[in-house]
Picture 1: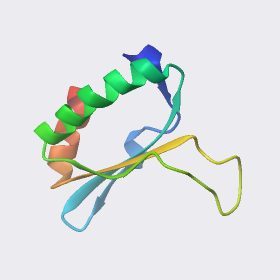
Picture 2: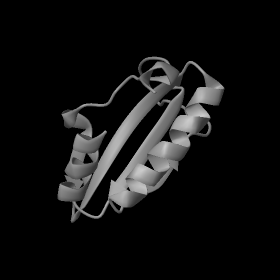
Picture 3: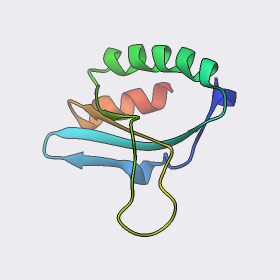
Length: 91
């Protein structure tokens, strides 16, 4: 499925613990819209399996300063960093 999208910013540095939850922030460039829709369905099931939920998924993006705005922003919240790490390791 990696051919359908290209993560621009997904790394361990983007996985942060906030209070008792784990957050994952990604910026994605979609290369194949139909393929990405298939990926989104699979990803949503995997995220739900580890107790995650989307906080931000797509929509219009802007930037206050710096480089060009990202194409798609995705933020997923997990009930703990442990669940986030389990999900990340399974991907």
